[in-house]
Image 1 (cartoon, rainbow, N blue to C red):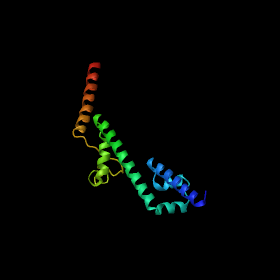
Image 2 (cartoon, rainbow, N blue to C red; image 1 turned 90 degrees about the vertical axis):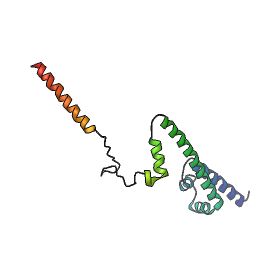
Image 3 (tube, helix red, strand yellow; image 1 turned 45 degrees about the horizontal axis):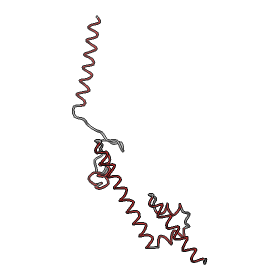
Amino acid sequence: MNKSKESKETKAANEEQIIRCIKLGMDLHTAMYTIGATDEEMEVLEKDEKFMRRVEVTKSILELNLLEDHQDAMNLQLAQGKTAAVQWKLEHVNPARWGRGNGDDGGSDIPGVVIVEIPGLEDYLNRGDRIGNDLKEEEDADGE
């Protein structure tokens, strides 16, 4: 076998391994490093328009499959009354409107902390203290 044919077969095998890594979710450069591609081989592959198109198509198909899986998981969660997956999707579909960096800091100066106000909670807690104190006063009166 001549060197040119060996080189083409090696390149084709490397491309297949890279595509396999991308199908698993790796980015292009990590996939290239994983197969042990040299800097020169990486440069040749990045300039190969046919290969780069194949990489983009593979990434697009992976994204589609993952979004379909996410939709299925989201439907299961919604059936259980859970909304985290819906919130995630909204944040990613329209981050300006639904994202965490939309200007609403949640009322806290601490990054990642959101203050939730529940109307009537303070009254409820205060009433609980009063009821507890009333019960204690009744016990004290009975014990005298």
